[in-house]
Image 1 (cartoon, rainbow, N blue to C red):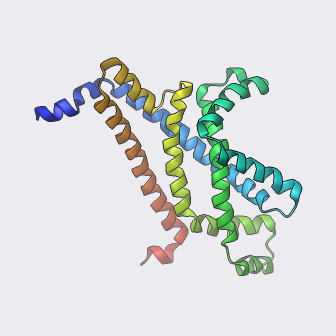
Image 2 (spheres, one colour):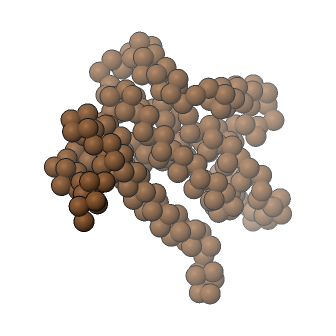
Image 3 (cartoon, rainbow, N blue to C red):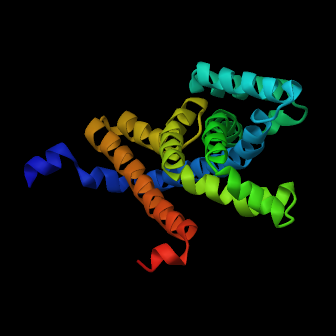
Amino acid sequence: MDWLIDFYNWRIVSQYAGQFATGLGNTLIAAGASLVLSVLAGIPIALAHMSSRGAVWRPVAAYVQFIRSTPLLVQIYLVYYAVPMLVPGAKGWSEMLLGIIAMTLHHAAYMSEIIRVGIESVPRGQIEGAKACGMNYRQRLRYVVLPQAFANTLPPLLGQTAVLIKDTSLLSLITVFELVAAGVQMNSDRIVPNESFLTIAAGYLLIYGCMLLLSRGVSLWLAGPAWNAR
């Protein structure tokens, strides 16, 4: 038992349980808000990217290419330093809010590409059938296209969500007190790298496990009662 204490002293970790709980909560807030906002922003971006008008899809394509070709850390710093200078009243915004904005701008580009592929995978006959039923454009999107698009792209959306959760660790560099910051602080105070970084890893594994359960529930709901009855 002594070797286990030497490798991972849980007594030290318990002394910082409150800080890890705060960091985990802030990580969940940042990841959850960024996920919801990036998906909501990704839908119109995907639709704009599919537009036949060059004035619509070209700026969107340029935005997606810029996001995909530059590091997230650079984008976080750009938002952190540029937004308070360019947006009136933004100087009082918290680091958490600026971090969520940066995360949303970054992952909305990736979510939009996943959603666009999902929309294009919906059979044309489904859309024509919706038109024949008298549905307008918004009704077709809401009841026919988007539900099938999300069902078709659930695995890549899940993968991008996992990347998003891990990317929240970069917010510690703009002084957001999230999970990594809590572990780094404990390591700075007590010089216990095993305890610090293994606890950080355990926290991210916990979040990812909960996300897997949620995604499974969503996939079963999208599949409908016929699949659930099997």
